[in-house]
Image (cartoon, rainbow, N blue to C red; front, side):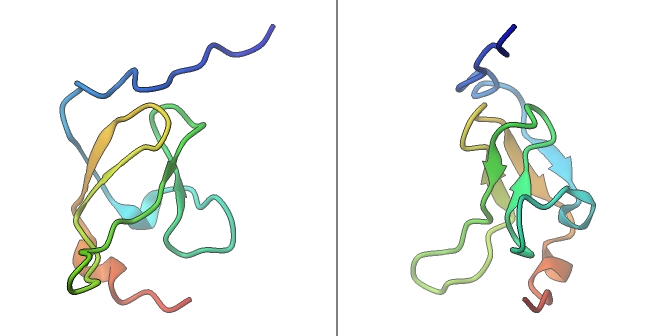
Length: 80
């Protein structure tokens, strides 16, 4: 039986604190992670469009769950 789609199902849920270092990566990128809520969407690590600094908030591109990276200072030190 096919899985039910979860698009935007968590859009109004409270923001969750996560550690980027503990998330499952979706491919070879050190930044792109599988959403820990729906396991189908991705967290893509947002950057400020002016400064290109990594942002400490993210949103799943599938279920809409919002996250706050509590280890953002360490994430910025990752080298691909």
